[in-house]
Image (tube, rainbow, N blue to C red):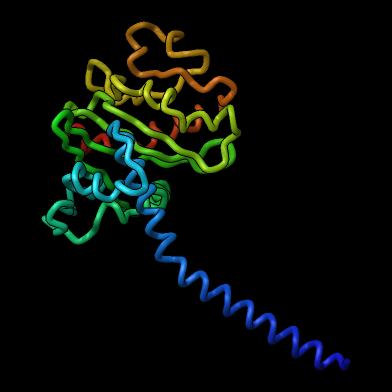
Length: 245
């Protein structure tokens, strides 16, 4: 068998494999995009104390999320999408399609940026949902924080991660952790933004007047807990102008 035959055979094989993989990627992409969208909807709704499944997430999102809003650094609403009518009231950008990670990079670089948020309305609650995104110990951490109508008190929260250590930092995706945020406040009595953050050793270590701004950090997950605290500070701080208007 000649070397030229082997090379031709290998080249044809490589091309065939590339075509097959490319075709598979194109075929699967719509399904992957749908799954990503459903996961995002579930995260938003879970921060509002609902428990949607993959099957009913879209229906529940359209039922309880009334508006998707995009704001600029000045706290102005520049785009509003009415979820129920599926029409824009203002602008042409859906908050759901805004990549928060990219926008926060723009902010850090001193460039123009926009921020997404969501209005949740049910018979029991009206909440303003703010997505958060940052870094943990091994990878990104992200989620959503829902504020009550006073735009200060947390009505619900839900956090996720990609690579944190099982049994340690990975515990931030457990309900026992996120449920601690309910009732906490991000502004102090004078109206100053102080955020809310996990405290190593427990929020009980804080002075009594400050405990409303802290939750118990994950035991053994100090770096992840600190990363989440920094993430919340940075992201919620970006919304302060809007929240205080």
